[in-house]
Length: 306
Image (cartoon, rainbow, N blue to C red; front, side, top):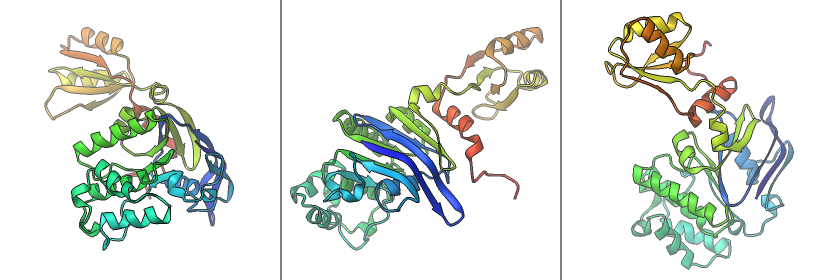
């Protein structure tokens, strides 16, 4: 279990994390979400004892991570797949970590096989692709067979097969009763992998709840409309205060509408004799809820005036 209590981190006059409290429980995958600059990586580094907090506490299994002897037996983590010595082989890298943590040497071959790098065990890491480095980072996290696992953007650079493999791996680890804490910007992966979410913005907690509960928070679910008369329908709907954008490929005849329910859109189309081929309310999504609930917490906004 990971417990964060009133955690705060300041760098000079900038507050990266402010009075943050949450719990990550075993037996489930907990996703960690927030816009760029929200303080996610800083929080993970404080949990792992890499950065000292300005205030508050972060504990793993009841004590600070630094109090665990032979830490890889207690917590496995992947924060940056590129932070490895490029001149070493994958096997040499893991063997050194195994020796320093009192882990049997056989675990090196076991985890390399588990992550699909058995054939690359003697190759230098500097020649690995990003996806291979991510696999090596996951192997490092698994090396000590720990009860707690922390991953920061673990599928960056992964091909579709790798993404599917990672998703299944995390679900299996949680099913074994482990604590799995996962940070990612990919909402689809969170929907398919996580059970619970911790969402932060500007260093503060926004919510900690189930994925389904969070997705249901979206109030502007949107409606998909398919019509051969997009220009006419767009004019009618915008006059009613709706927001209308093209949906799919250019010329598809599909529109994405927010601000009006499907029933009202259908009634307006009928009143103005506009034919509709499709009218469907978009299902609640994690991405829609995230964009809506973190909009005020985005620090680096594209297109914002300087």
